[in-house]
Image (cartoon, rainbow, N blue to C red; front, top):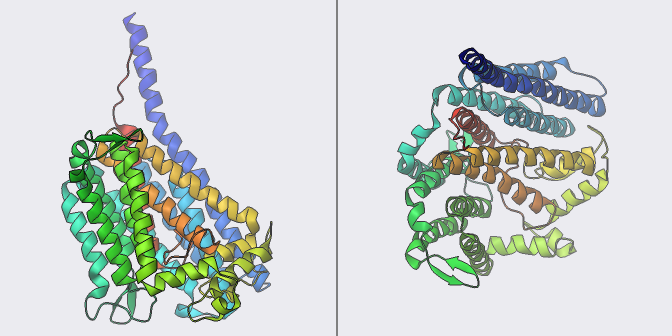
Length: 460
């Protein structure tokens, strides 16, 4: 009987050792498929727009593939239980974004360092290298819990950097850029969302008992006491301050939405969601009555095809051109390099979704949205499977941030909601956004590895 038990224990141990290897093998084949898709997209862009294949851009793309596989190898040694789907999805989305930006550069005759695709390739290399460094250095993500308030302070400092004399970049619609020496610029709000996610997760772990305390019941819902509304009001006021001072409607909505989502996960109280929606409604009402640029966004949204609105300075010309591009693409698209996405202003950044929709069609755009859906679902699954509250809230908050950002951008360019100044994660041109999103990938990989390694409580 003892021998049988020993044999059973050995079999279980062997199976446990094989599981991490199985996850990484699955990731390896998915990565090969993702890189094949990205490489095919670059090749089809060249054939469609130029009629020839330039091996140089493919060689550069191959260099990025080496970096991605370097991250894969690192995961085999330091995070072998990490989720196998997160990295391949981030890879294919980044590759498709580079292909579309490169296609627009061809149409606009952008070459050298002035080409947006060249900068995007450089930022992609920096982003993946940063993800590798974070996975290697952050052996235990729970140490971030110790720096809850430092992370909150860092997030606030990053948000106010554009107001520091000599740092804030000029000429943009929103005061969200920082320029160093006129040569290097970045958007600190992208990194601020990660810092604030860490702060919100740590803060809610410390205060969830009081936030979920029993309040008064009304309309079948238990509403919190007034003393628990303080944190929500503070975050709401910070979001409004961002909207008013920086003219950045997108970041304000993103931060407030992320906090409400994490608050709901921490407490399980529907009343917080209703309070959040009410706060958004009040904030939107206030902004549309007081802020001219917000009024303009709503006018462009509600009356986009009015000739006077289209021709106005800061009018709906971009929005209408993007919608026409989507209509031109139809169901299956014009094909890589065969459309005219460059006609739409900022087609490489704010309007990259209409650019992709024109050349890949509704079918291709739906596939991209499905990739986002799987990415977010894996992140939420990582959070819900966790047994420690901090990791659960952090993974959920970061995943919801990606989901909300995609909704805000896709909804804006398709006229579902007013357009705001954010970037589409992984796809749009922009170094700050790319670095921040790949750091989110690294954090999700680290959390998922810890979740799979933690001991399970078996009942029965």
